[in-house]
Length: 113
Image (cartoon, rainbow, N blue to C red; front, side, top):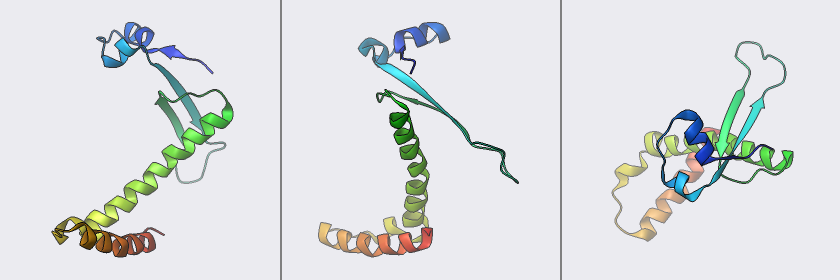
């Protein structure tokens, strides 16, 4: 797996140094392309940048799974906020909020499939 220090990346792209540059963190690129061409849509072609270490194919697949899970989480939060109107409850105690969220989580989970 190729490792690219941020300082090299900043220099190559003509970017100003940042906090990451001072820390000299290394970034890894994961490139994943769906096999074949599905009918009715473009195939998945992801290029992900991460500062998490990628030492093997197994590490890369793990990070890809995390990224794929992100969309499920985004949909879940959208259902909680928009569909269930969780923010409109205006509950003031932690206990009441926990109870409401428990009910909404069940509802949102059922809605998101």
